[in-house]
Length: 125
Image: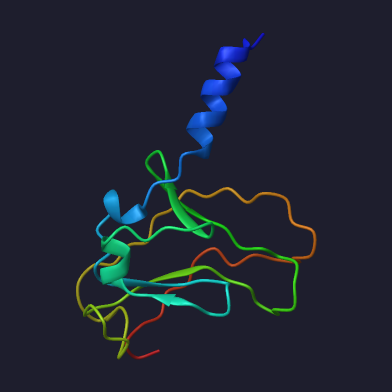
């Protein structure tokens, strides 16, 4: 049985939204958001950018993408850049070791038939 104080504490903890740049090094990344394709630079992410589409909760980065609307492929995309501010290429799969690790949870959706969780783009396609 939950007490009112416990419920209030839980609600307050869940509603706190921090900037992911406070907990993660996002200098070599940029963020594309579903709101008219807004693009946020790594510098802006490091300076504390956060909004309803992208925030931290505890030790996790949170992404929100509305699935109802006019967009065919709505997205909130965090893309790594080999060189901050340059989109010439992404990962060079012929050099080094590259890993993408994530734990995710998908909430309910009213219109999406499928979800793409992660993509890897290489220098040479």
